[in-house]
Length: 259
Image: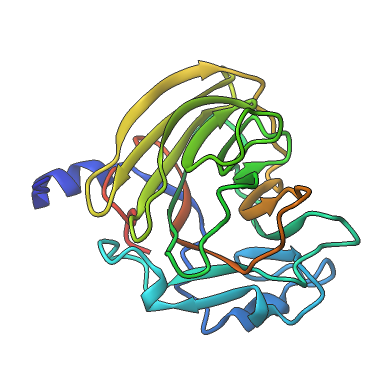
């Protein structure tokens, strides 16, 4: 798809970034350790992870971002390994929470991120992965076999609204999926914008009614994997970049407005 400079400028006009999670101001994942409940600094709350050091679960680098994103300096690799169990749970988890006082839970906002997987350390299609979800799961992405469904595996990446699939596609390796959740907290609706690679976002699911609710500190960038009997815990990598929340007209250019 050909994207002109004029069209890019049009899409970013009047856009307001409420919270910027694009990792541009971080030198390494160890910067996440600067945050604590008593010292709430940086763009992310970092407390949902396993017993290992931060570098076991999050790695930053220019190779981990969508190459079409010219605004983000780097992306992040999130890893689930044999130690990635949080707080005694039987679910493997690595998640970051926005650290902000901005109104990311009011009015009409767009939650942006790009995501990708590789063949190496591929996420299991035999287990349910809840990705980039709100605590109440009113909107999220999912990958793999969803608990309770027929069969033994599911190769699809799905957009879910209150546990109901509204869109899906096979999650192939090395393909960047660009996502924006269109959330209207006032009217209680959620829509879905999507593209692949460097293509501009388009709306593929019109807003649908659901029970939108958030305290502004309960959107989880990352992944929660449900356990499943008979399937072992292999190492799995997930890649994210271009993470931010905006109000106003949606920015359809990949990467968003200038940082």
